[in-house]
Amino acid sequence: MKRPSKAYEIALSAIACAAAAAALTLGSYVDVMLAAGYVIAVFALMVPLSKDFVWGSALALIGAFLLSFFFCGMSVFRLLPFIAFFGWHPIVNHLQLKFVKQRKWLHAVIFLGKAVWFDLAMWLMWAVVLVPFFGIESATWYPFVSRYFFWVLFIGGTLFFAAYDFMIFLCRRSVNVILARIRR
Image (tube, rainbow, N blue to C red; front, side, top):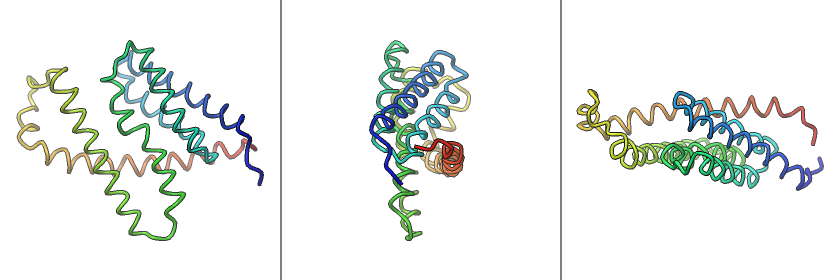
């Protein structure tokens, strides 16, 4: 099978970048759409990966972050989880499936590494954004979470990440099936 041209890779990555930037910008302006904006942006970044364009997806991620950063009035706090974890996660999953084929134990080691990465990204959000800027110290649940913070983060965060990682693998498969109709 012939490898698609560079122009096709650039065009597909540009479409993914535009869709991801639009989703992140909309999510940054409308508070209830922030999580949906992250998910739509992740789906958009899976489009170049379905054709095995890893560099195209990485550049689309960086472009989407920069565009949404400037469109949102340089609101880095809303985009920090995306650039710290959620944007890079589909690329890492693609590379995991591409290069780790036969060793099942290596998938478990990579999962643990990704879970630690997710937990550290959530800790970064807690330490840099939630507590200093949004003042969640006055919330009723804050004393419990601050007392058992590492238990909540590492147990709850890892369980949430396990479900998220499984769902992203399923979504990756569905994106690949949908985009298999594009014949380049």
